[in-house]
Every structure is written in C-alpha cells, then in structure tokens.
Image (cartoon, one colour):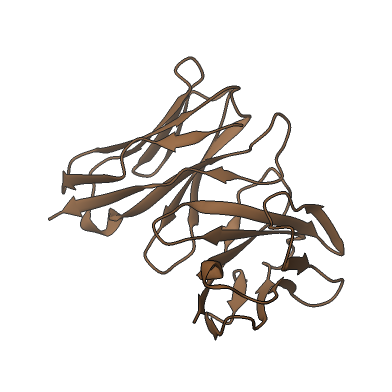
Length: 113
Length: 114
C-alpha cells in the first residue's frame, strides 16, 4: 500500500509565476490536509479537504492560494503570482477519518527566485 | 487561541539513557494529543496518540503520558539510540470537538550521542 505521494519534490519558480503542488492520499483515505513549514518554524495548517469539498481553509491566505480535491485525481494546492515569502516546504497529509492520525507525504520544497 | 508549546528546542543525551520531551498546552484540554517524528528533509511520521482519559500509552521503547491537571504531555524514549535522533513534534486539535486539523508544536530536536 503506497503512502502519501507528493510531486514534484522540488519546485523552483520565479516571482510572479504559478506553482502547482500535487498530493495523492493513501488508498482508502478521503481526508486531505495541507501544511506549510517555513525554515526554522513549525508546521502550520493551511486547508482541509474531502473529495470535492473544502472543509476548513482557515489557515490558507485569502489571496493567491487555492486548493482542490476533485472526484478523480490528486489534491492540488495552487499558488498564483508567487513571492519570495512563499518559499517553504509544503506537506500533504491524509487520514481515513478526521480524528485519526495523519499520514504525511515527503513534501514539496518550493523555492521562489 | 489554543496554543501548544514544546519547551526545549534541542536536547542532547547519551546513548542508552531515557530521553524525556515535554509538551504543554493552554486553555482547555484537547480530546487527544499526538506525537510525530520528523527527520531532515522528510515529512512527519506518526508515533503515538493518547486520549485525555488515558494516563499513559506505550509502544516498544516509547511512552507518552497525558496530565490534564498540569496541561502537559511527556514523551519518553527509553534505552535511546543514535537512530532516535530526530525532531519530535506534538500536536493537538485546535478547538473543542474539532478533529479536523492539527496544531503542531515547534518541535524538539533530539540528538542521541554514541
């Protein structure tokens, strides 16, 4: 049973470009969470999704950031018009239910130049 | 807002000793606390979950306690090994009844010296 998969593992974007981060949850998991980890800082919750629904996006910036988890395919975290401050590691996690432990992917390291 | 704090940023111990990491929370007691391990360049890995009605939980060389009076969880690694060196994170749900997302502490970096 494959774990949570994220791609790309590393992504370099110039300021103003768009970044698309993909996450495939573990088989059988319908709950997906996105977190951001800045250098020397802890994990910060961004958004929680179930298939085709955003359940909680309280941790996601109101502008430039969006997330989706379509009926088919991976969950996508999209950052438009990236700025240097967006450089961070973005982790996706999945769980079979909200109150269960979360299984994390290896992360996508975004660098904005 | 509900906060969670891990007292020590870094902890060095000698191989074979017991490592004890501390996690403190504010305001209400969460329904549970979780502990994760994170190695450099990797995602966190779930270790243990302890519910508020459980005083203690064990898994191999790991032991977690949950003290609602002190608002604290302790994480112990007995007979520590250099391979235990990593950052350990505690996490809690942020609101009563909320199990939807986790609030993580900033982590304690453990180094086990051979």
